[in-house]
Each structure stands twice: as structure tokens, then as C-alpha cells.
Image (tube, rainbow, N blue to C red):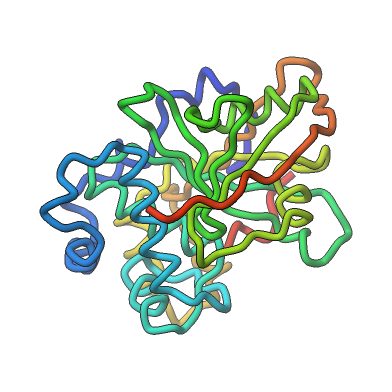
Length: 269
């Protein structure tokens, strides 16, 4: 099975970096990274680094159809204007975080709905801030952070779920002045009772890239099936809600915008 249940405490120390060292990241990421950071950026906080990478990606990639390619092919096509959806942004963001010493996770949202626009779910990331000593949810495709009452302390995924369960107010902040999120869409993705996050684990970029490149004459779904059958597949971990998996509908409002700094379509039940 590629899908299983877990707890946030079990998932706390899981991150993409532990199984994807810098020396296995394709060279194009190091080349592009020189356009993101300059010598004057040496003292940025982890949060500002995370924000700056996300801003650069969104300001230089217009997006388009989902790609599902190897990480090297994906970033090349995205830069060339050939596509890129939320899962593609999350995929390439992982690699930029690794080479900039940011611990990162990739998450998906499974939305149980008949609404075509929302049914496919969504992808986002979580980075670890050494300064704040906590994980922070970052939506790269939409350039968002989430908050509760303290605007200086962005929420982690576990924070967000806990606030949903307690029916507390949840705020979101757009950190890129060029990107405007649809409040209705944000509510449907992150805050609805039928929205469930899952962590993507055991994603070995070098191995997945190898299969996606060598077998690129096959449908992407078939390549992922081969990864699974060969024992090289990633896994999905759905965090358990401590209180009977019941999540109540929260309140949400938009924080005024600040100046800047394919989830899998089907999940095995």
C-alpha cells in the first residue's frame, strides 16, 4: 500500500532532505539558484529564504498544464513556459530548498467532492524555520502563509488542523503582490470539512527522475506503477485527527497583501 495513517508526532522529523542530499539534485537547480539569491542575501532567515524562492518561481513561471516529468525536465519546461501546476511547483520547490539548506516537506490535499475544479486536490509545502523552531506551511503556487492571532507566527500543517478542529479563526496572507488568491478556492482547499492533508514520504528524487527519464515513452501513470512494483515508490501518510477525525468548519479572513519578499488525481483508499 502507498497510503497509510499516521500521527503528526510520528511525521514531525520526516523531511525530503534526509533522503535527497545536495549532490543528487540536478545541476540546473544550482544554476538557477544564482538568479534567486545574491551575495547580500547571506543573512536571510529561513522564512525569508522560503518566501524568496517561492516568489522567484511564481514571478518567472506562468504555469499551465500539469507536467509530471522528472525534476530536471519539469523545471526546464516551467521556465520555458510549457506548463506547471501546483504539484509541479511543489516538486521543484523541494529541490531549491535542499540546496539552500532549508528542511522541506511536500503535502497534498485530498478533497472529497463532486466539484470538478476542486476534486483533483492540491499540493503545497512545509519548511522548517530554525529561527521560529517550527514547521511552517507555505503554498508556493498561491504564495500564501496561514496565521491564527499572532501574525508573526505562521501556522504549520498540524497547527492548521488543530485550529480547524477547535473552530478557531484562521487567516491567510498573500506574500506576492503579483499573485491573487481566490478566497472561495482557499476555503474549499484548506478549510472545508471534506479536505484532508497527506504527507508525501520516501520520495527519492534521483530514483524517480531516473524512471521518469528512461521510461518517458510510457504514460506517467504507468511509470509510477512500475516504481511501486519495483519497491521504489513514495508513500502517502494521512495524519490522524486526535478527536475521532472530526474537523469542524473554521472562520477565515484575508490579511491585506504584503509587499514581496499534480497532486495525484486519485489516492488509493
